[in-house]
Length: 318
Image (cartoon, rainbow, N blue to C red; front, side):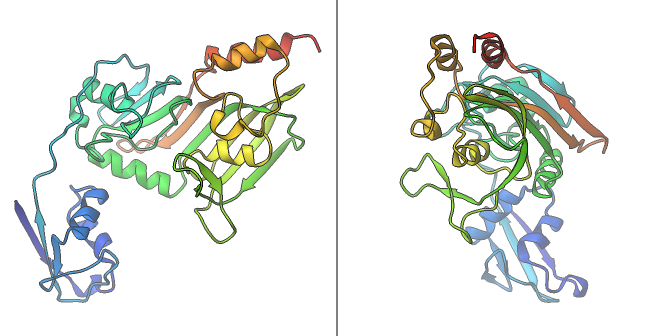
């Protein structure tokens, strides 16, 4: 157990406790600091307070810092398709069917466990069960995902996500003919009250704001090929937003079972069943490198599972 203490300066008066601690204890993640505050291990003037407590000049802040929890995730030597790697970041082209990090439904075979085996130093960065994970991709989604290899890189990348300065471009195939050549879906999302595993468009004034921009790249009888760009990164955002317009993704059993028209082409139906997920691919990723400060822009080609679908759509008889 370590102890850290400091006194609030006059210029720091009025600052929220959690933000003030982030500056004084920069070696601890924001997640860890929040846990310490909520656990009563941060005291101001001898009393436990909330993260939003506004500090006053002259107040003494004491923090008890227990040893970090032991890493319980077992590294797994799973091959990774690495797009970029240096001392700060690891960018992987994730296949559909791989879970990003352990959850209630799957404990092994995750990207996080594979990254831990590939780069053991990533342990503890961002959290013991999500080492290095800056953002996530659904199990059924393929494409580019960035992991941080150091706490400094993690904090910088998560800050970019919060400022919405990370660019994420997706390609997808959806049911139906999307009428508008382009559009913006600005609809808040929240947990579906009828299902713990689903998200849903929330009532106005509730949920978290979610914004998706889309462009129609190609149209086929009963199917559209879209490019989507995220302004926010909510769980299942693209899937829920497009389904709310009546255009669920091909292969999406969670959001498309009731809204998707039956596929009459047997070959197309077979290719959809073989997607091993949904017809969604994270094809573009751009961010500012947390070490060099240089812009990074990466692309991932459309995977075979979706190329086969496009080929069938382009060449089938009308």
